[in-house]
Length: 515
Image (cartoon, rainbow, N blue to C red; front, side, top):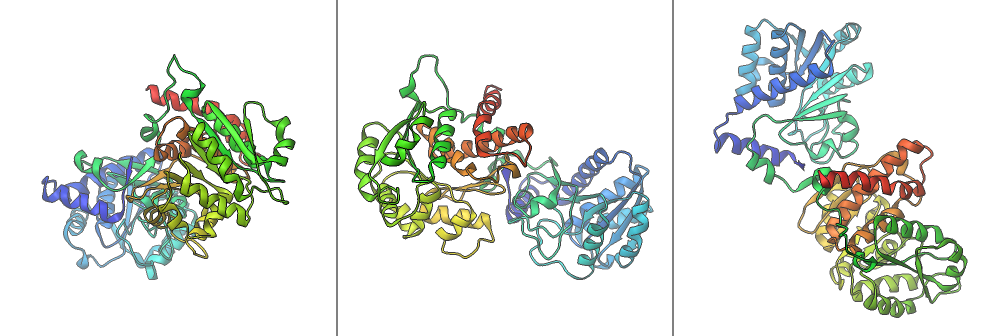
């Protein structure tokens, strides 16, 4: 499903009216009716509704909702946050219609005093203060009303987006309504899925109100990574095939005291379906690892006195890659030294196969000019930073806008950029953004990122493009985490649980693929 910014949604509104002849008045009517139907499905036993209406089209939608509720026999009170003489266009028209219906319309000044009484009557609040066009911080009477509703913990349904949530970034503009449900129209907005806005959205319902499909199908440059997107990406397993048909992953990972990261990435890659996997690791460290490897093969590398690979290992890695590997993943547990920095740089310049760069591979890259290094790479690259690593790559103390950061780094570097977090984002050079829909807080545990590295590398090894591997990898990783959480709980979830849940995740995804 495509996900829009405020300006992209406004463009669809405008073209729908100007080119296709569906008036804004008709769209507002449809939006209000659709919202009313969803509200009553969520609160079938409620009899009292409080509608908070702002000055713009979002307030107009709320006025339609109020009229529908009133006409269906529900006790409905409208609090208008603007003098009705200042209403314009469709909002003014629906205010005038609502008056003729005999609805109770009150000035917003009395809202905070009335709310405790309304709460005693189990009133449901309908938030129609501000829509997707809000760009400045909320203050004054609006902020006071929002804070009062939140403080009383009343049930809330927001129209289009919770008032105060930036639709493009998910940022909170001063204060924001904490909705239990949000009903939006045509397509969802980025702010519905990016925290903190995602936490304010509650359960989201997207309603079709008649926007032309030709517009919604081509709209925007952001999409959800959902079952519809990934259903056709699952690598096929022909009846007649062998291990060489499914790729050979070379995993450059591990150092003294950090073998676990390499093992988790390796196990995840194998569970994702690669035909062969070789762990390239400092020679002495591999000796201690032999009892833990079964399906994996090993490639000993030169090392320093601290048990980390040296720059001289590049020749052996490239020789192996040229002869056998279909993808290289570098970083998990690798450690950080001048030699690791040089090795990472050298591999970017000379690798004959795609690269997945994670963990200490990213840390090594951040010690140089990462954008220059990635632009000069000899191969396609997927880079998988978490927020701290992304901040270091972008020479920033802290990252405030995850969407902007992912897009800007992908655009500048040319690498498929997978920004881990809540939610995981994937961005590409052309500006397209993908927002993952799977995963849970239990996955915030050491090793989870190493598992993701193994999954993505395995999918590239099976001939998926780096972008498709990042998209399917993010989805599968989160889905396996969700499955593991149902079995282990959020508090007890560890990275190896995610690996163990990969078979069930693939069974689920393959069902989607067949459907």
